[in-house]
Structure formats: C-alpha cells, structure tokens
Image (cartoon, rainbow, N blue to C red; front, side, top):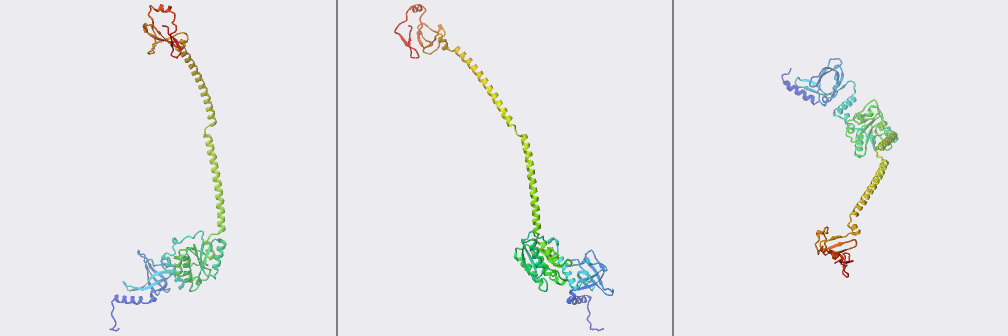
Length: 430
C-alpha cells in the first residue's frame, strides 16, 4: 500500500463516482434486462426493485419514480423478466450505484421493438393517443386529401373506391414516399401541404401492406406529431391488420386497409340514394297520414259546427210570423185609433159653435174686446153688441125695455147698411 495514495472522504468519493458515471454517455442511456425481485412500492408511489441475472449471481438496484416521464410501471411484478431503460447514477446517501428507470417493458423484445415501445409510451404520456381529442369525420366531404406513393396500390385502391362509392368527392393528391429513409420527411411535408390548401375536408395517410421494416416511416415521431398537429381529420390507412403503427394510434380514425380508409372517409352514394328514397317515402306517408288526420279533424269540427250553428230557416220563419203578427196588431191599432178619431170628430162636431149657428142661433160679443155676451145682465141699454151668425155678423144696439115694443113695431130702416167682417154688406137694425 502506497503512502502516497490520496485520502478521500466518503462524500468526495461519491461525488467522484457520480461525475465519472455521469460523464459516460453509454451509462446515460441504456437498457438493462433481468428478472425482477425485491419489489417495493411505498405510499409515495415510487417503485424500488432489483434486476438479477438468471443464475442469481449478479444483481443491480433500480428505482422508478412516480412522475409523468415514468412509463411501463404496469409491467413491474416479482419474478417478471423485464427490460428497464434509464441512466446509471449514484445514490449519495448510501453510496450505492443504481439504475434510475424511466421505462419498463417485457423482456424478449429486440432493440427496434424496444425503441418503438419507448416512443409509443412517450407519445401516449403526452396525450397524442387520447381518445377524447380524436375528431369525427365529415359526413359529406367535398375534397378528400390523399398522402401515399403515386406508384403504390394504395393510391389506386383509394381513388377507385371513392369514384365508385362517392363520385361527388374530389381527390386532392399529395404524393410522398412511404418507404425508406426519406419517407418520414416527405409524409410530413405532404400533410402540411394538404393543411395549407385550406379546402380539404378529410385526409387519408397510408400505404399498402408490407413487412415491419416497410412500415417504419409510420412509426416515426415526426410523422406522429404531423398527424397530431393536422387541422384536417386524418384516417390512417396502413395496409396491415395484425400490427398497429404509431400513426394508427395518433390518427382520428384507423382503417385496416386503404380501401377501408376510403370507405370510412366518404359515404356510399347508392346507400345515400336508398336512404333518401326511404326518407322520401316515409315523408310522403307521414304527409299523407297528416293530411288524412287533418281532413278527419276538419270533418269533426264541421260536424260540431253544424250542430252548433243557429237555425237560420227557423229564425226566418219566426221573423215572418212576428212581422205578420205585428202587422195585424198595427192594423187593429189603426182601426181602433180611426174609430176613436171618428168619435172625437163627432163629439167635436156636436160642440162646434158653427153648427149651432147653422141652426139659426147667433153669438153675441163685445166688439171692442171680443168678449162673449152670455147674459142680459152683461149688456146695458145703448151698448153695441156684435151678433155673429152662420154667414156673417152685424152690430146691434141694446134698447131700453120700454121702447122694445116700439122698436119691434118699427119697420126696418132702409138705406143703412153695414159690412160684416167678411167684407159682405150688413144691415143695421137701428
């Protein structure tokens, strides 16, 4: 033992190891495989476990913290063979070297499969696969975007299917390689071009079937994020049924084949025509039934109105009868009034002074005032009175009683005349 060897404190050694480990790029990003044991899950939600080799002679401490970046915790089970991804670091409190795990998956997967699974878990954690964000497809698209190879079978399958099922839709083609190193970038640019067009209603992105390595472009992060960021709903159309690509998880709708994608992206015009015919028939039947119901209701209303309307003819007859009765009553009243009038006329005629005068009587009155002379006591000798007869009047002078006899014997004087009130000549008796 050399006396010149440096003396470290525990903290200094731990810090030294931490720096050396942190500076090794291989230890910052590695996969460790083994059998899981000594699993502990405290209330904090973190997971502490050990990975051992199959012979049990080697083990390594691991920790998986409960945070947003931790993926695959569901694979943790005692005795399970897993692959754990993370970085190697030093736990300063005990000076222990351990693996800080950020992802766990079942053992037996190849490097590409593990990388794909790691990407899948990462994107899922970010919410790119969230079903609640997936959009529905427009029921009647006017323009259908298509991202695929112009030389592949997928192009012809989609175009022919749309032409047969829904010729109203226009196919907007954005060509892109779907295989090889350049494919992911071309697919991303084609998706961006269809979004920039501004008039595409739905987009189909995919290719025909192939081996797993042929589908690699649809398992890349840039393609997944381009699909996720598309303003146009995306139908994935990778021609395989057993495997699922990252693009399938991110797309709004997954189709099993390009033909299936065309079926999902647009309706069948023949089915629409059949539906329209059915709706027209149903509408016609409903309209006819509604008209029949209204006609029946109208008849019922008319019947009720017929029962409730007034008896016009009966009213007319009653009016005629009332008018006839009134006419008879009026005639009787007129006759009654005529009889009463005749009686009144007879009574008036009996009381008419002119009638008395016609019988030879005379009415005496004072000429100056017209006051009647009804008694001898109302006249003094020498007074002038006016005698009114049937055909005129004359004035006379009252004589004293002693001369009345003489006057009676005296012949009437000739030559003295007087005119009556009617302008006729009248005689004066004295």
